Amino acid sequence: MTTDTQNSRLIRWGILGCGKIARKFAGDLPLVENAELHAVASRDGALAQRFGEEFGATKKFDSYEALVTCSEVDVIYIATPHGLHYEHVMLCLEHGKAVLCEKAFALTRWQAEAMVAKATEKKVFLMEAFWTKFLPQFQKVRELIDSGAIGEIKLIQADFGFNPDGPVAQRLYDPALGGGSLLDVGIYPVFLAQTILGRPEAVSAMMTPHEGTDVDEQCCMMLKFGSGALASLSSSFIVHTPVEASINGTKGRILLRNRFHNAIATLTVIYGKDDAHTIELERESGYGYQYEARHVSHCLRQGLTESPVMTHADTLLLLETLDRLRAACGIHYAPDRQ
Image (cartoon, rainbow, N blue to C red):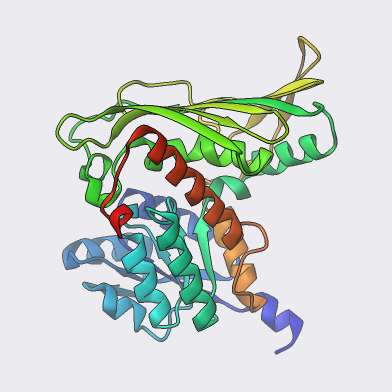
């Protein structure tokens, strides 16, 4: 295959699970060059039919097994609750299907290790769908930090909290589905701090349990790093918070406002005490899921089995830190006992 042909090869996507986040991903997929939504699957056949018709999928399946055995599908995006990711990723990998799996990648590090080992054994591409890492603002943050523009990072503050409107989705509070604010939204502040500062040498956390299920309704976390830097992070299902991040260095700070994990239009850099500069960011139409889908399509065309941007090691380290935080504040899931 020539390079030109390889770079233009059509990547045919399947989507496993037809919920809210799958709708956003499917809506952004037409923005990815030489990619198409070929098939969707839900255990609710009527839902799969409606979803597939709305987003132009050629095939609509009422079982996940039918999707993973579809020979025309090159890669499957897993959009089910994270308590089911282990089962669904393993199903795809057993059938040799490349996988982009939504965060949280798994409930525990040991599950993630088994998933990565299976992908390695099968020589199949596998990546966690941490879309924030591929967004323009994250690329700009990395550029600013690496250039030394704000000096040595000493403190990161980030939050993600919302009070869900009714009817409340079952996955938010169901421990079998990985319910709780930490894995659902707290993962974003943890990801940000760890991606910038590395593995924390110490963690502490406190949480408020949900009455009846004992998953965390809200969680406050402190991370300490070998450099002496600290991160103060929080997540909540009880209150709406700013959903902002402040990356504070010895020469200045970077502010990410208005849902820092989303594709945002601007970021603010403050040099010294109050010399503020606004940076305009690239902003394509859509939600922003096209950036990670574009990257996965590129990886598949290059024959890669692991992303060089969101590596397996990145995912395993994130799950390790989440495991440590859960242990610190008493958040438990069934796989912890295995």
